[in-house]
Length: 383
View (tube, rainbow, N blue to C red):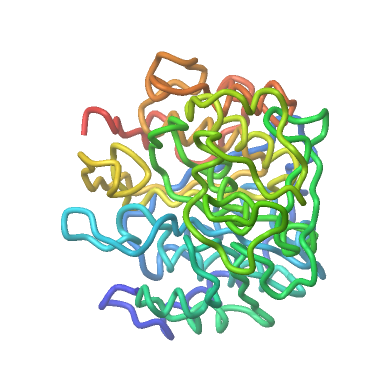
């Protein structure tokens, strides 16, 4: 997971040193109180020890994490979409998964900022195994994360997991596809929610960043192709095809769909489900791994993928603004609508979330700090 030039122990130790300097700086106040939030961009050429330094700087530019997480339970949703695979010979974390160094650095800095409990969450496709076991199968070491801060827990949120019942999270305003979603308890049982995602395009959402990462919050026991008809299945079966194409309904125990559910167009449905989920489970901190990634979709199954090396990290206090800036960093216009890249075949999740009042996609209204967009931009389509 960690480059050969930097051992895991050395990397975590370096994080501690960086965090010590960072926490000694004067607090600027948490920026999420502003209507648009702040978005910080930083150059980071490779994974390894510099990831911790870069993220510490970004979090400092956002105002520091102390006020947000001190004494609180923090949930971190990862982006480990699909299964472990390779693109052009490179492993998932170098192309379509968030890299473990970014996860470990985020966990460490949250712990240094006083987080009482940190839960690492993901919904691995069609499996009820513990998240740690899934990581081991993918040749990741869970101890890398659990040793990065005190009291780190793991939860596979693709089913009931360690909870006794599912949590029902309502969408303010009634929702676009559902008025509420039944999710694993971890998405409700937290004070702060962090989305750690990869800088990527998406075949049915245009882009997949901190907001689209939350599409995976939904348990396949309820929203999967093999979900129980009346009650959730005990274990997840299949993918979330019903949320893409509407060919079947979720378990009857969950809230029924709205009339919009009748549309079978994934480019209509996926952005709306995404906006719903972000409204129901707000993101307090968005972290985007754009050091190494790929073009032309969210995973190797989309085809025509090419590894690219933008060499950037992005963090923000508002998920819509953060995703808008990240969209611009890929060479796209975040104000684009359906029919224009990257939303040729889908509605814009950015626009839908903006209409729900979750934030702005207008770069002129976003407080962008750190490296200017013009200096960090990379045209994914040109690549």
